[in-house]
Structures are given as C-alpha cells and as structure tokens.
Length: 202
Image (tube, rainbow, N blue to C red; front, side, top):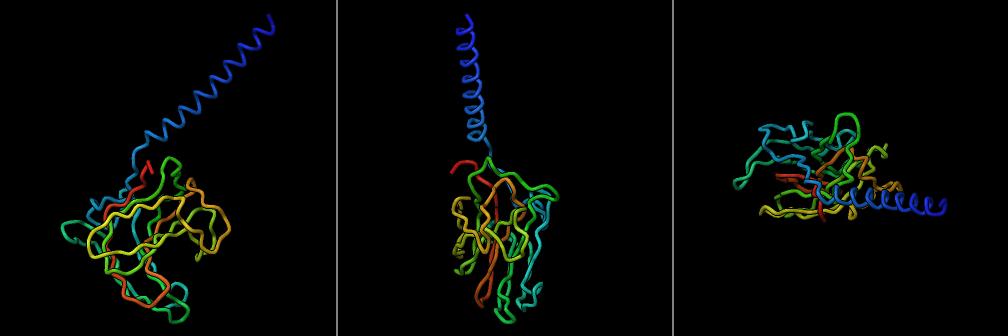
C-alpha cells in the first residue's frame, strides 16, 4: 500500500513538472512582439515612454558632432541621426540612445532578438545594447549592419550580439539601453530609423 502511494505521488510530481515546463514553453511561443518605437509619438519619445537622446564622443573629449531630429523619408516617419564622426582626440562616434526602462531592467526573456526598419547612406553602423551588468561606458553588446538608401528591415538575434570589451555574458533579462551608432572611423553619418521592436520568434 505504501509502495503504491509512493508511486502515485511520484507520478503527480512528474506530471506537475512536465505541465509547468510545457506551460512555460507555451507562454514563450505565444508572446507578442514588443514595440520599442513605432514612430507614432510625433516627437522623440518612444512607444515605451522613454526618450531618445544624442550622445557623441564629446563626453570623453572627442570632437564628433551630430544631431537628432524627427523626420519623414519615403513615406515613413523616422528618427534621423546626422553627424560628422571624427577620430581626433581619441574619439570616433555619434549615437542615438534610448533607455528601455526608467528604473528596473527590461526583461526580454520571451524574445529572440531585435528588429528595426532603417535607411541610410551605404555606411556601416552598429546597434549596441547595454545591460545592468555593464559599468564602463565603452562596454556593450553589438552588431554591425550596412544602412542602404532604400528602407530595409534588419533582424538581429540576441545570440548574434558580440560582447565588446567585457567578458560578462549577455543576459537578455537585464536590458538597460539600446543605441544606433556611427563609430570607429571618420565619416558622415546619416541614418533614418523607423519601427523598432523585439520579436518573439526567431
């Protein structure tokens, strides 16, 4: 009798574990894309309620210059980043950055990566992520892409991000900031960014 009761309890435990795992997988599969910015605000505010800002290497003594404006290009609303990237004084970047949350880190565990619409001037740009694990300003997780004059959709799996000047593993449940960056060489930056979202299925 005790042996039968033990087997019954073991069966219930296994069923409960299996149900919990399957329910978790189901929730991930059913997760909807998270819109970061659909450019419907009419200003530099994102769909998350936080605001975009321009950051250049002048914060560390560089001389790069840039500006951030709301714009429209080929029928789509966008944020436009223009700038002159200079490597003088050990500088070399212009960036538009967005804090994903105001206080606590954003948990993107249910998502596979980031997707955005972009157009530009056939130059190479980066997307940078920062997490709450990073403390130094030059640390990030990044991916490079070419921005063509025609609108294109860039989809970047989180697994494809490269750690820059950090040995800390990327944790997508600790996201703090996203940035679109012209970096590393002297050139004229001209980038339009439309819809940005986290996508749920790779």
